[in-house]
Length: 141
Image 1 (cartoon, one colour):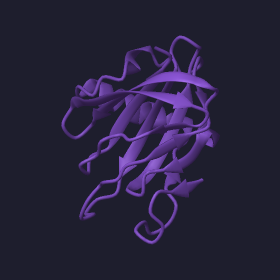
Image 2 (tube, rainbow, N blue to C red; image 1 turned 90 degrees about the vertical axis):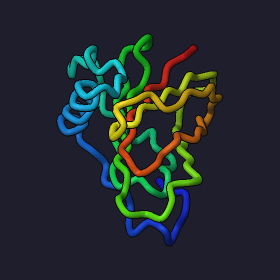
Image 3 (cartoon, one colour; image 1 turned 90 degrees about the horizontal axis):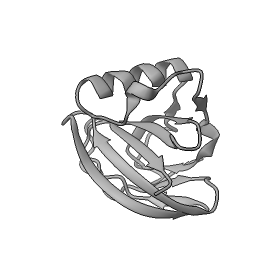
């Protein structure tokens, strides 16, 4: 896994374990960043951090859960504090060939912040970040 801007990021992002990731996603859902975390039954979701190919340079932590086919993927990106900027923001995932809907929630603002359609393989998208952690849900449209 690589980061988008070598030299800007002091070290690789910390990959989150399943229990910590589920806790962060449930907390984000409770404050209004609604990735559909209410349906995150831990037994049906699998930790798949190996799907990260490249993370945005601003990511301090990251975790990815893959659910049943209709549920898609939910991931959490923890933002580094104090950077002068958070652009460009490029996320690359090793997903199967196809079209995907990518929806982003800003945890700090408790709001939906972006939606895009991306194709894979690999999936490349640009989640908007202003310094807050993000929750991203990826499904087949």
